[in-house]
Length: 254
Picture 1 (cartoon, one colour):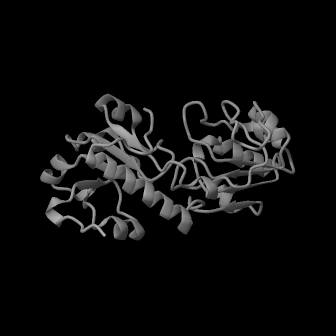
Picture 2 (cartoon, rainbow, N blue to C red):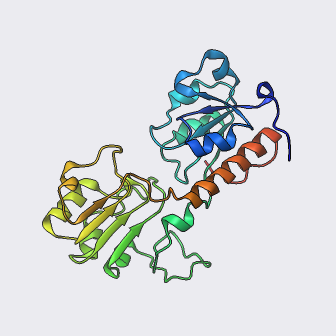
Picture 3 (cartoon, one colour):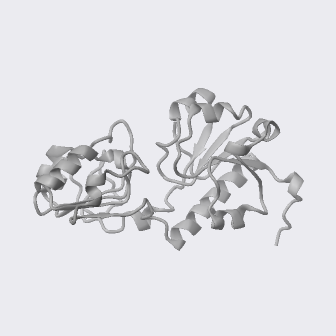
């Protein structure tokens, strides 16, 4: 077993948010850490890598506070909570969780909609989201939030899903027009909703809390022991590769 380097020789990783206990235990022998909100000038000047969990968002101002920054390593698959334009302008590299969450966030699909067919997916491909909704009893969202996918589920899609249909969102809150969702649930346009994500997290529309046909959870659909272990492996592999001058394992194209 390799002996961990002395603490003062370990690379410094800046944290956008405090680490989960599992992450802290697994990473403690490999790196030194400083929390961005509390970092002194010396730590901010030294940090070449920023480890980003979930909310709050990482803004251009946060990135500007780290002049030596080269890598933004996200523990999530989605990276919409990081200012991507600022990352591009700085020429930063970015990584995400890769496929670590895939099995737990989207393991009950029977047909799917995407920008193009996926040859490896054994499910029927439906090219239009409205048509997918019209042919489904349950519509599950697990895609990334981009300019293209923002509010992809609007009233037209919910009307196609219909009175007996259920909308499940484990992707990003902004995939759904949330005020329209509230109206459609109130009017019986769709039968119900199961939501793990919200458009303006951590805020949840109070109307949803009072509805018997809505099930809410706190953005933890993928936090199983297996997925946490998978993310840890990816984070360690990316940071080890970066600090060793090797290609990272789950790069995000900016």
